[in-house]
Image 1 (cartoon, rainbow, N blue to C red):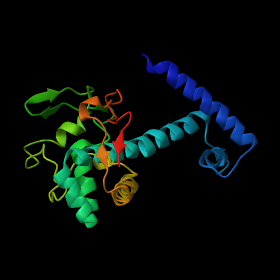
Image 2 (cartoon, rainbow, N blue to C red):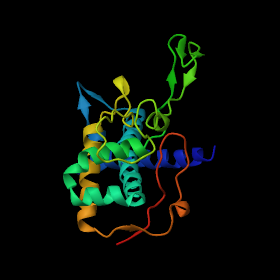
Image 3 (cartoon, rainbow, N blue to C red):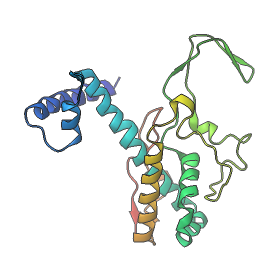
Length: 220
């Protein structure tokens, strides 16, 4: 796989960074993780790597994509953008709709059936791996009225962008707050924001799980 060399290089970088923070700790998150101790136990190298990867992917990348995808969706729907600019109190339902409409995560991580499960006339055998396509669920016409329309005032909006049950995103309240602050602040500071170029000219990052833009060129 093409990504393997990049993952290896990033892992090597982090291991070197951990060693540096052990020798010269500073007031930063990685130093705090390296020094974290409970009952004499410290995080192992694998635990440190897992935590940093989790923070970057689940705690940073997803929120970046929420903001990028959300702003793009608003720019492509000028009526909804205008409604939000005229009434910023709509920012909370707007972010929920942006999560549903074009969320930062397309599919869940792998799930495995603990027993034979019948779904929609198909039996998923015990032990079989399943990928839940969250993006498709959020556009399900049996669940949402006019699912392909962006409506920042949508009331019944129990989407799955932040997953559900035991897999519900632990950082969901923070992600929502960051999205609300970032998008509302952007619209206040740049009320004439417009997309530079066409939507077809935009480039999306590859992958099955995360959905995000490589960049969002705008004029203001």
